[in-house]
Image (cartoon, rainbow, N blue to C red; front, side, top):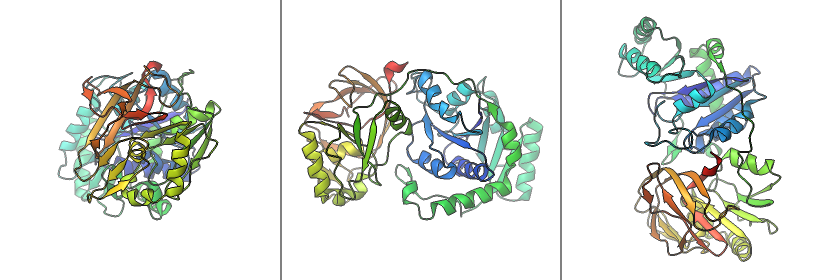
Length: 437
């Protein structure tokens, strides 16, 4: 069993992504095979983690995934020397209602595998009080082992000494103290970080993070703190592919694809055929299915509207074979996309959907969808677990609803997706079938 750790924090913005990326690269540089994971529904952080570790990062989600699904995904670490899983938000933050196996919190994942937690703490504006916070996190939930803390944004040597003394009195190991720095941040966007594929000198940036972390964190102590995971379970918790040959849009406008989904499809014998709408490439003519993932089509709407080869190929495919779009992909299947400046751009027109970014509204949370029509090889009536995170608003959605959709508390959601002929689309991103539980 591969030993592992979960890198968590009391809240978002504490620096856990920077610490995780620095640790991944630092351990990789000394010859360790480090398997990264990301707790919760996130597409952007795993891409950075893959760049840092040289291994694909996978999502682990206790709200959306069954135990068998979580364990099957974590089995990617079988050949690794060390697991580093990055948490989401604060350690105990999750959905207000339980899902398949939990609330979606990072603590659920740590408890499931027995991975000790390293708490990354932004200690700016406090000193000894940081020990009280860490003590509360250590004791709140039985079954969660805290390996120690990494202090972030330390102002001075005196600041460091005060906090270390309080932590020692509380019996909490300090595994590192990182001084304030304006050089290690990554630029952001409304859905999180700017994508890894858009970062200039990404490799150099991650190397600098690793240098900084190595200088201020005790790598040997962190490796010793890693705990052995519970045994990985065998099971058939896999997502069936929607076809033998699947054409998937992959570029900076269509990049939100879960690694476990593609791994499942390949394991079942499916062939993945990537193409780039931004390069005006059409999906493979002999593909059984076209899948348009989410991403940032709103940033490239004019370019997509001019991509005649892509759009005509998509329309030809939809005449006799299935096409599905998630979130951004759903918007591109629609009639039009209105950008943040209020300009309308004609899209594929395979659905009547019109969406707008001119009036931004956040739509965020777990979703459970009961299909009202077949989608992606799954029959009508199938129940799916997923997540929604976007700022677009629906101006028109005239087609038949694809699913009845509820949030984590069971409340009905208006964004039901839609379908027309062989074309389906939704704002919810598929994570796992609910029937896996």
